[in-house]
Length: 254
Image (tube, rainbow, N blue to C red):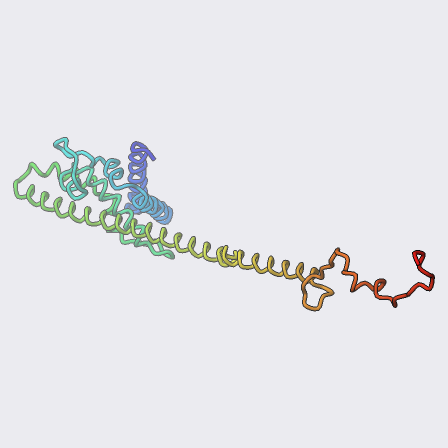
């Protein structure tokens, strides 16, 4: 959402709240419908405050620049030294969000004084500007009230920002824990690399043992039988160990 879109959205919320609250306070017959519309608008204001960046929100209500043209250094400074009509817009936005927080889920009844306070800030601010020139005492009282309102508004806004950041961090922490649990579950169902290597080594050892058994089969000691290809000596030959025969024929030379 751009700065201009955020600014338009803030004004839409304040305008819608003004219309529904005005009807409810006046009691013109549409109390239930006006009450429902008001709390729907209050919920939108609450969501906007929780999602918007603080600097962007100050810009949207016109508090990004002080009356002297300088930029505020902090939220309290922006509220304390900003234009009162812009501070009033921020205060109404915060009070709308507070109404959404205080609303009962089963009953949307809220004291009429709270509704009147929520919607009548702009009129009161304009009337106060006119009365400032009437007397010095009245001006001092208005200035003191404005200072108190500025401090209260700054504290309320800072509390909301801290609460929003805390919620975001808690949600982020939950997501991290869920992701860690999923990773642990996935790793538990997958065998580790060392275990897989050990199983592979065992399988290879069994296969090697089987091949050795085939080679050793049929021998007493398990070692392979060797056969010599050399002829045995004559003393060990069977055909060379027969009984000696002598000739009975006379020698020719005799």
